[in-house]
Amino acid sequence: MILCLVTDRRRLGAALGLPEGDWFEALKQQVTGAAAGGVDYVQVREPDLEAADLSTLVRSLMHAASSSQTRILVNDRIDVALATGASGVHLKERSILPSQVRRIAPRDFVIGCSVHDTAAIAARKSADFLTAGTVMPTASKRAVDYLDKDGLRRIVEAAAGQPVLGIGGLDLTSIPLLASAGAAGMAAIGAFMPQVAGGDVAKNVQKRVAALRFALETATKRP
Image (cartoon, rainbow, N blue to C red; front, side):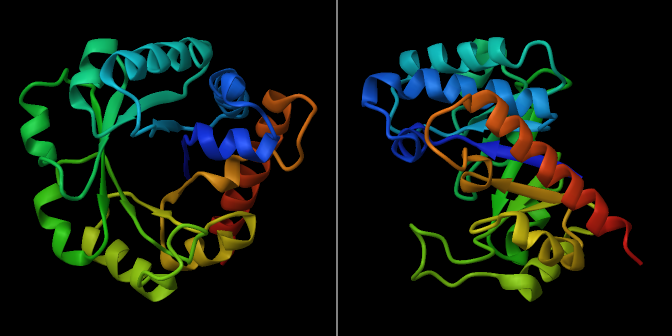
């Protein structure tokens, strides 16, 4: 099963009650803990950052995860992903197609793609995995139509073996839904947040990843 941490330094900083000047360090600690816990991917999604600042952040997070198998992906910024030597990119549904990225990327470059319905899948078969959402209501997307289990299952079936991660409003309690829909795992922001302010952020997140991994693997082993 695949676990993908999607970054949001603003939300992380707010959860920890930190001033803005400490957000980047908190994010580095979050990724350090997630990597130690065995998270598969970290999707660096900080859309307000300019290329130079985003590149600096990506390199910092790559260093934080360097002693692990965790791969750092850059959200939609192919130029930054290639310039920093990141493991790959995660493309928005309205971005260029993965087949176009393959022409300029290294052979082992990881490509994830967001999809919101089955119609988007055929043109993205060359991606390593798809992220389908929004599965459940979230704090920022309560008004949008969401997939729920049936919608996620339809995307999984249409992907025909291509790994599909659920995203949106998912946490430990959502694991049975993901498993029953046939998803390959989950991508999330909130599920990887420390549960309490203060303390060791890295260790807290490491425990969160371990709990999510155990729940996913347990759910998929059930008959």
